[in-house]
Length: 337
Image 1 (cartoon, rainbow, N blue to C red):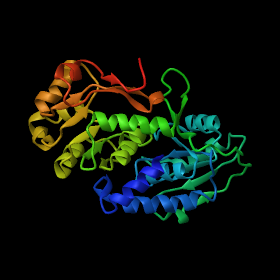
Image 2 (cartoon, rainbow, N blue to C red; image 1 turned 90 degrees about the horizontal axis):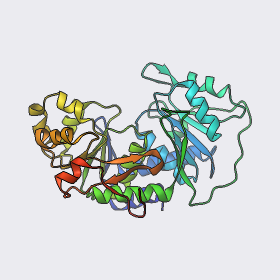
Image 3 (cartoon, rainbow, N blue to C red; image 1 turned 90 degrees about the vertical axis):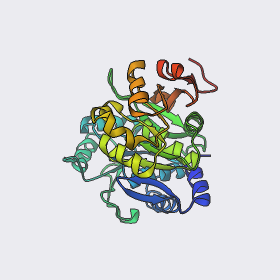
Image 4 (cartoon, rainbow, N blue to C red; image 1 turned 135 degrees about the vertical axis):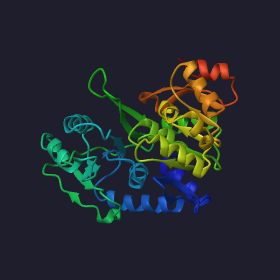
């Protein structure tokens, strides 16, 4: 049971259903499964079980497909924050001894390929670099051959790592949390149960895919629930409210409601009429504003961290407002604090 298995299940049951909307564009479950297969063929010529594959680019259809394709190959994905510098990229690539790197030519005025080359020049091993710019077929991705020998790895067991997710590094160098398939699926099941998600849920997330809020609470949770994920390439509170109204979204994640409130609660509340379950982090007084001024009944505090694949404590939407607004939730079953 892994991401690839979840997608195969969804594609079999909901082939024509929208799996992902991103900035107004749509991808069905069947199309996503086809894109994953194409990426498996392209990546499989360079990557095998146990290999670490770094992903350094923005939210895109290819990002989700790569995350699943790497998993299907038995390799280990290494999502990297798009705001990091080449020096920080070098630290992570060295730490995981990456076999390959997926990146784009430019993003937000930066030349990621050039910065990647600078980081690779300081490493004592080589890796294949895939240029995934645009939406060309994976078979046509330019591949920069390594100038040094690859790192060889022993094959990984089926129950080994899904990904290595790096912490923010606010107090020291970023640390790679080694997260398994089982841990991801267990946490995703917990989230889906707490948020009452079903295949009919219209889910929306502002999370960057490189963060565990994106990989677990957006991507993995929606694959497990079989629901549609509405995402965005960058946070925009006006776009969030417009998308909720347009697609009648009823559950959300990684939303910064301070920005929404700043647009004017009276103007935004009608657009959020369909929203039933959401969360934010803050004081009881702040979350009460989301409930009262924006009219979202199932708002709650939560708590999680990279090492727990994201959400570790959550509430049910029908728990009392006193619980949901004043505290951070119950621990995931099988764990304790």
